[in-house]
Length: 335
Image 1 (cartoon, rainbow, N blue to C red):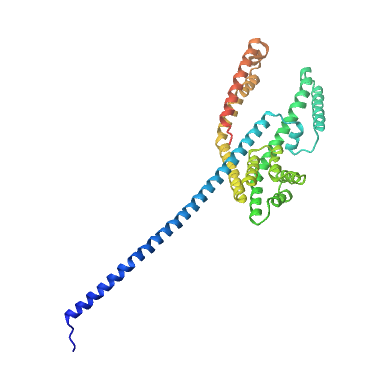
Image 2 (cartoon, rainbow, N blue to C red; image 1 turned 180 degrees about the vertical axis):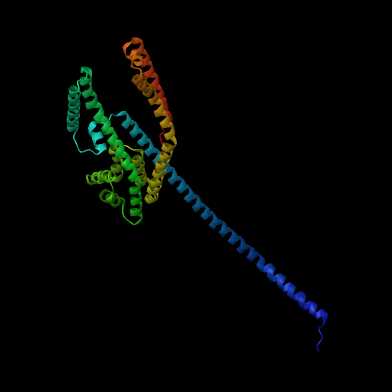
């Protein structure tokens, strides 16, 4: 057994500590220098990363402002175009095109005149008064055909609105599958349902004569003057100017159009009771007058023979017209 001298052991330990202290003192400056260099490199890298992120954020803000400006410009152009269309009276040819009728204005006038002459002949055979015989063809020949034309235009627009979101969904699926926008529009023009098919066919024909896709889509509102068509033209114009995901934009537009349709149906359902009440209230005076005339004719004839009765009926007609106008504005909503 060998014994260790405590003094020798203490000397060895102190010598090791002194050697470690000397090494640390020599390497401390080098370690601190490397540490400062690493910190400096990290700060430079983080500064470059922050600069890149700031630049990317600035680019995103500029892109968003550019898109916002483009949307605002297109909306202003749309509003200006709509105001011009409302101020400008549509020609008969344009209205016939909107109704989907393939007849010329001359034929329309001929049909209106024939219809008025037939009604005049029927009134003459029925031994009607001279004023009725002369006034009926004017009212029927000028008013009734134009009312029928307006009814056909409204019905065609409703059919277009019912089918337009489905056409937009087809365009979205076509673009996602890899087809360009021109081929997607041509697909609707060949495989869609009328009147959407005929309107997109006009777009394809406009492209064939040299118009761009945004201009051709903008011209669609001339034949189908609806806000939904204007929205579609704005989406195409913005995408062509500022870029972006076209399929997502058109898909969002289709969703908005369906929501508008649901809201219109909901408003119509909620206002049906008020409309029925307005119809009943408006028809009640005429129904009561007819029943009183059937039971006591002399009691009602004084309104037609006495000048004071004429005054009473005139004032009543004015007040009834005001009431019907007010009730109509209360139950009609624009969405």
